[in-house]
Length: 240
Image 1 (tube, rainbow, N blue to C red):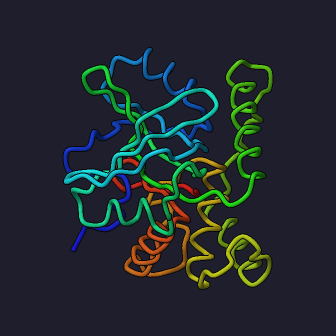
Image 2 (cartoon, rainbow, N blue to C red; image 1 turned 180 degrees about the vertical axis):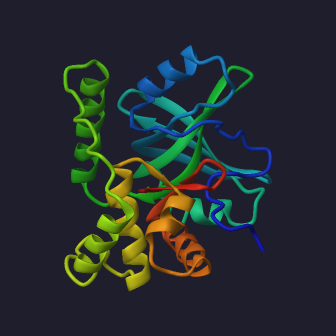
Image 3 (tube, rainbow, N blue to C red; image 1 turned 60 degrees about the horizontal axis):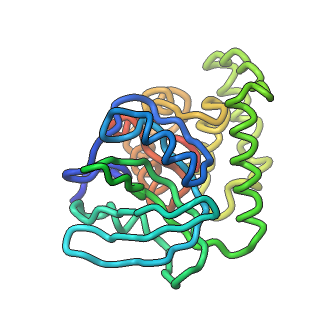
């Protein structure tokens, strides 16, 4: 049986060393970042919306040719660990030239740049394409200091936060359709405490009022369903 929370690592796959930054991007931006970096793999995780021009099943990997309005890039899904490719392609159906939403990080090998894909899903409407392009522009404005990100408020104490969880556990669940009550509680903790970033596993255990074994099982279910991503050797979690 594969170890729990394995959505990123695979045998022979480069492993980011530090916390991962989630960046909406296009291929021109990714190529610029890859060209500047000297390391063989990026620290950042990117989200792109692009056309899938080719999808080839090889012995070791799935090899993709991806295209957006700024260029073409190779995509790769590793098959060397039991469920890596299964999770990455969950609910994805390839059709030549159709749009897909992709999450992954870059690697460089012999001057070739490729996007290692950890999640790929079909894009069903043009609104999703336009929304992604707006996210890319927004990210560029923040990067260039045209817009400023507001400072995060102070983290609530454990007692304050647990009281709020109790009061809201049976109220607004619009973001958690299809989840059981335990998964809803875990997702609320991660959303409220991470403020859009990632949250360490030990902090999740501290604030979620469930047995540790139950928390582990539900975290794995949330990762496999595509609601969470794992980072830092599967010890941090962030909302997809």
